Length: 216
Image (cartoon, rainbow, N blue to C red; front, side, top):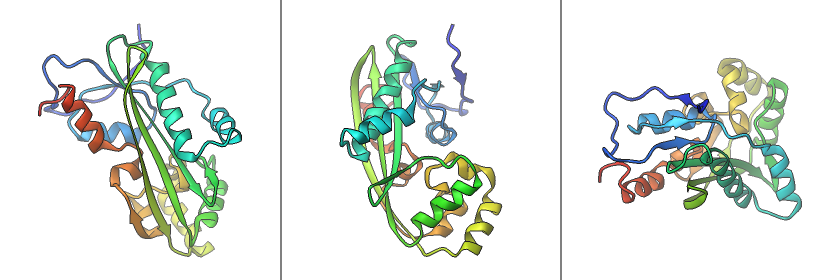
């Protein structure tokens, strides 16, 4: 029996009657919220992947941040797909890069403050990939990049922001959530909003419609 975490269903999911099971291979609350808000019925299960080790290996081999995100997205989907024969399993990954430095989620408030100081006054990229796997084969993937310019932040503002935002910032690379108080950090955002959130939703919905998972 699978140990998948059931995600609360929306009141009127927009799913085709005979659609295959849809599974999100992610522990990300933000990605779950995006799919649920779009009216999709799905299961969610985190993939057992050592992301840090994979990223370190790929970077040592000369991979770009976007290539690493794509590899991790597929790896997550493949790990979970073995438990769901016939299902469409969605994997996603996002890597923040700034001046060739890759940023992970900050483990604590001190690291969050250090990340914000490092990004202050600079433009960074959110390299986001989504991949769908079915029966061990990659059925579809999509890569996207968003560019965000952070205004110059004072240490006083950083401290006040982190106190107001709370522990939620530790769940996001860059120590911000654009849909919340993190919007105060930026002067410009180039790219799709869902890409910033970590799941390029519109291309994914196009794929699901083409495969009769959701009505067209």
